[in-house]
Image (cartoon, rainbow, N blue to C red; front, side):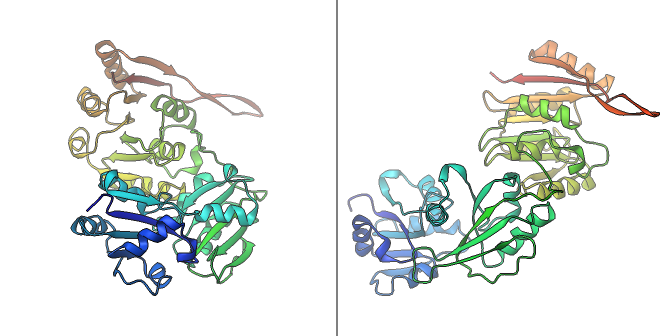
Length: 400
């Protein structure tokens, strides 16, 4: 059979009418069509063998491999490469085997309906993912477009916004765009009680109340946004630490001695799709870090209960490592060995003993050794003076 044998076809709510001629021809020639029940219903007259989405989703790749040699079409809603199945399939197969047929995405349709420039919106998904993932992007005046899981997603998003002082935000549900059942439902986050269809995109115009929680994806969140027991990298030091770690899209951080998770959480907030694994010896701190991660919009923050370097061998190699607790030569050496080329290693110390370890690492391995001193204004009687925080010694290195 002449390659490609596998077509990934984006389709609109109006079914076959949404397809360009090339995609329509490939669909008509397919021997097997894999799609959701909703998309199968849009094509009642197909003669091809029909297969529903397998569960779990990863089983789709194995099923497609079994079908190699037949003409197969996989149907997706909208653009198959935008929060959809196309990217996963393209990673698993040689590109010579497949052809991707894009469709106008739900985000493009939503912008067209609302008159929003796409360059000025954040495109997010809560489909199969926690809606808390929108929180790093919530800000005064921000516009968000969110792929949803079902009819209950707008209510969950409305509660998240209201709890953080954005109850005046305007929510617009855009359902079945481009189809015969297209509908729009609008209301405020505060008191949201609208009934909406399962299949829709949610648009959010963020409006801050007077007491809104103001945050940024730039590192240095206020300490009181984290639950902690005192073991927290203070916000000023945290901002400097993240600057040295250099968050990047999709990059993995090991947060050794994670405590309440502040560094790992801010790493994930700072770059799209950034990942972090926290290593912590105490179960109560692990649980606290996971609660912080959910509250601050990075529910995928992973926590490993154990002691470094013992647990490090089983972890995927990172692009960056932060050592905030449990510092030793053995931990630093194991972290450096695991780091990918050009990976960043940063270690902080507040005790004389840990400072000695950092001085030895600097003498042996090079890098930068920095002393960070921070003071905050505080009451002194009826006046104001400086209250110094514990100074922090920081060693950082880029692996060559």
